[in-house]
Image (cartoon, rainbow, N blue to C red; front, side, top):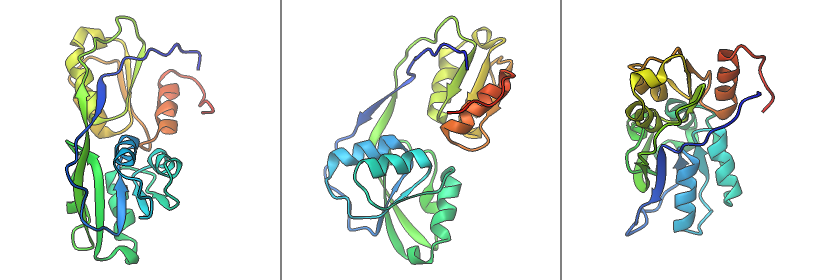
Length: 208
C-alpha cells in the first residue's frame, strides 16, 4: 500500500482467574482470537465443536487444536443466525468463554433455540498510550478500541485524518471527532478493513 505502519496498542489483554470450569456443554462459542487463547491456557480439552464469529477466530481455534470449527464469517448477529439455522443445536448448551465486558448478548439473540453460558476468561484494559503525533490513517478493530482512541485524541488531532473501523459499533465512538472520513469495512474482517482503507486513500484494492 505504500504506507508505514505505526503500532500503538490502545488495549492490553489480561487473562482472568477462573475458579471453576463451566458445566457440561455441547459446543463452544468464540467471538475473538483473544478468547481462544485465554481458553486454550485453561484447558487441554479439544473435544467440543467450535462456533466462531469470524474466519480469524475459527482459524485460531483450529490452530489451537480444535478439529471442528465453523465460522459465521461476520459479527455477533451472523453468529446467532448460524446457531439458529442449525437444527442440531436446538436445545443445545453452548459455552461462551469471552471478554469480561462482552460486545453483546448472544444468549438473547439465540433465545428459544439454544442456551449460551457466558464465562469471562479475559479482560481488555486500556493502556493509556498516547496516539502518535504524525499519522494519516488509523485502523480500529473493536468498539473498545474505538472508545479508547476517542478518549486519547483531541478533536484537532483527528482533523484531516482517516479512520477505518471493522464495524459500525467500532466506528461509533469516533463520530464526535473531526476525522476527514470515517469508513466502515463491508464485512467485519481484516481483508475488508484493508479494502476500506485503500478505497479511502484512492488506491486500487490490494492483495492481502
